[in-house]
Image: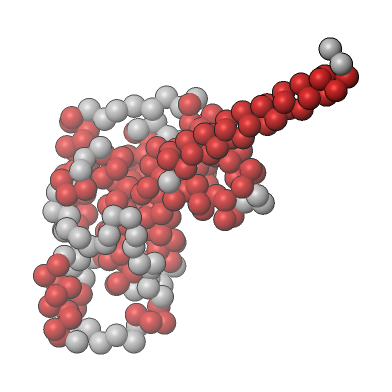
Length: 229
């Protein structure tokens, strides 16, 4: 074989290997995008590079595979559903306590499913592997709960927190979104939702009916509020 033929053969092999490597990378990237959904875009936006973000997501998968996750028994599922119903009823008279209890019950549910709950960032990373599509709701609810702990959350923020907690709660419970007891429909879109209102914007609103304002949102209440304003 001539030296020219050897060079051509080497070039062909290199090109083939490069193509194969590119196809493998594209396949792995698409698998991460399918699995993590919006969490993939968040990781890329916050990471040093796309490759670094993808390494982080694969590391999450590795840690997640080591967890001993558990399915809920029918009795546990019913117990949580009943507890959530009580939280929503409490929201009418004590929205601050309802949000605190919503955070507690979601944390309990996370632990019972087998996820570590000690460190919040680690908890979110573990949840992102199988619950990425509702994780944004949990982050927003967590932020509002921190504001609530300082006594600075508005009623509208507390209302949004209950709605956000509900999304991850239903996901972890393994029930359809509309099957969660006494949870109003279409309070927020499934894929997108409004960020929590700030105190500066909410406190300027005129509330004509305090009890109606404190209700967990449903279509009728929101419709009435629109007419009253």
